[in-house]
Amino acid sequence: GEWIKNVLIVRFGASMYFANMSYIRDTIIGMLRMTNEVDEEDNEVAPEHQMCNEMAQVEYVILEMSPVISVDSSAIHILEDMSKEFKRRSIRLAFANTGNRVAKVFENAHLYDTIGKEWFQPTTHEAVVQCLTHQNTAKQVTVQVQSPQEEGKREHPVESKETSEGSKGTEEMQ
Image 1 (cartoon, helix red, strand yellow):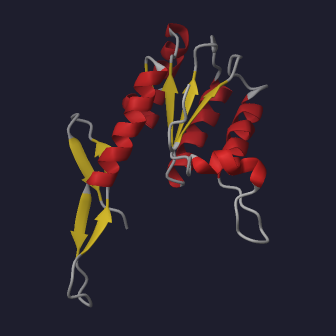
Image 2 (image 1 turned 90 degrees about the vertical axis):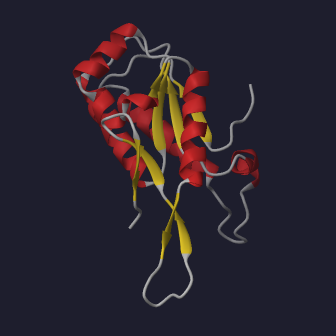
C-alpha cells in the first residue's frame, strides 16, 4: 500500500452495533488527533507521530466495510453524528466495500440521503478517487469577493456541492 495524502482509511473487523460503536468512534477520533499532535513546548511534531504528520491533516475518513455484515440503528445514529461532526471540521466520511445486506440497512435508514450517495463507493480505490476528486474540485472552485473597504479582489475557496438534480452547484463560505 501507499500513503494517500489527507485520506485515512479505517477497517474494523466486526459488525457495527450498539456495543462497539463508541469504541469505533473513539478509535477514529484518536487516529485523527494523532495526525495533528504537536509537542506543546516547542510547537514541533511529537517524534512518535512524525509519519502521521508527514501525511498532512486528514480531510477524508474512509470506512472500509467489507468485514461488516450487520449494522443496527444505534450504529446508524452514530455514523450520522460522526458525519455531521466531521463535516463541521472539514472532514468527509466515506464508505467503501459495503455489502448488500448493510447497503440495504443504509438505504432504509436514509443514510445515503443524509451523507450523500457519492460518499458510498463499491471499492476502496473508488472511494479514494472520490475523495481526491472532491479535494481537487474544492480547491479549483473559487469565488471573487470584494468588500466596500477593499479596492482589490480576493479569492475564497468554495466547496463544490452535488445538487439534487445531479448537477454541480456551489455554496458560498460565510
